[in-house]
Image (cartoon, rainbow, N blue to C red; front, side, top):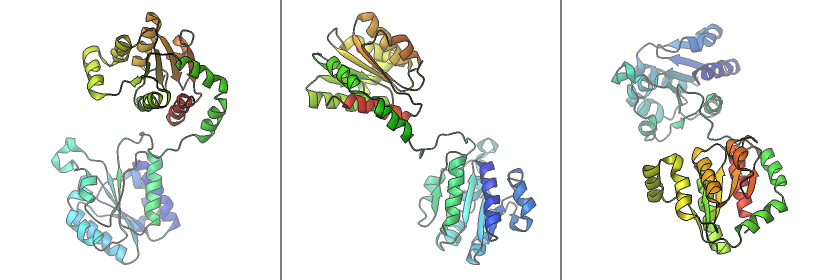
Length: 331
């Protein structure tokens, strides 16, 4: 993220002669290209953070576009009064870029969460990018705006983007592959059951809970999911997470029940063990998976399950939505 910030600053400086980079005696290697290409617009202010903020405010009042960079506790906590008065209250075009913290070097290097500190300021816009792509977007958006801005950079730049869009082409393809034959098979499997038990983890558990309610209400089928917190934590505590679902199936399912087991990756250990339990005890079950065609659950239980529905995608959004659409299709 820090490297990406340095690259974007060079890009902006090439575009706009009013862009300046101010550092608090930190980040030299990251800004080597900027210093070499634009030495007159690179200012090392040293360890005088309060003065650095006021100086940047004065630059903005003259029509310049300063980006101020240092580690977050030095950028926010030491000069908070100057940020409040000189930047936020005057609503000037200063961009503050804070990089992580270093608590191992003592309490002065440990940050308070800037979300709480800065959210009290009325004009300052806040960005908390999770990876290099979002860092690029945040810096470019800040440049297009004249609002004062804070951008938080973290050491880990491998977190997935929260704004990642679903693969719509895969979604359309898999929707087209969902056949009427598949839907009829599911409909027949649900008929004449004393209980429909639906199990999944995370987003798949949300699908399970939703479908259980709909099957009960719309189809008049007694349907349950394993989402009640007290019951779930009881089983996890007593049997372990890996065995919780298989024990739940043992306790509730009969030879007249249908167990629907959902795992987007096809590798969830607790779903795998629940499949084993159903197979070994002669309980009818179906499996819904995604990702690799040869995932563990599909590979080991496709033949023993009553139905196997696999979504050809590695996108959780696509897989979970197709599982939900498939299970809804018989309503």
